[in-house]
Image (tube, rainbow, N blue to C red):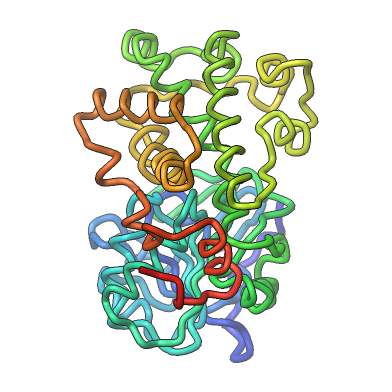
Length: 378
């Protein structure tokens, strides 16, 4: 439990933040920053979602942090949210990153940093592509986190409970040469952020791409007949399902390898994140006590499909196609998701056209990630 405090008045030397998003993550992020004494503007596209926060003047935080975080401004007008802030924390489903880039474009200012929490796969590339299309001239750094720093839930109209705070969260800027500036700026509030090699690392170490869509889709009948009343990992991932996701994992790693990147395997990740080991991926999942009690989604209209397919699987497969790497199992899950939701995720998701890298070689993509060079772009 954290110390129980009301947030102090922000110090002039502290960075000023805007938090984009009024969901579980947005409330936790805005509340945590405000409790620490940072000036925070909070934005949500609908006023209804944040009206109680505006009435209260802030967010009550409990759990790993405790206290009332008083906000500087609560608004559904993006211009007001971005005024006079240093760091813009985007805390919404990755499918909304394009929209946020579009509405922010004309109001971004020199020196601001945009951090996607998290970027999923290709978040920073997509955000950058939108700003370029809008001909944004402001000198802005775009960065993405590999995962979200908090495990949290909204427990009231203006209340957030933070159940856990990750010890380490890799973050990378586009280009990578600016990552140190982002980490330095963030460490005052979140020393947990550490530099990743580049945005390709944060994007391809997105393990949710493997553990979310396939088990959900392959358990469709069970989810719909039981409203998700079974353990998602320990019961939903059977030996057969584990073989499917392991093949998808091999495809993800192969695409990363084509970019000269060593991506962590799901098996290795389970060991490093949870200390869960086993001779097979199935065994490691079953041996992970951290998954005990986690229920499946209650229905198929869930972010494990509508976020993780277009913002995680589609970019992996699309980049794979461009670089000549087969991703047949990943594509099979994309096709099933399209059938279930009736949405053409291949066209609407983060394909190479939407990422702004269509026609580029592996070397050109790496150079873009490292140096931000535009010379090789089509």
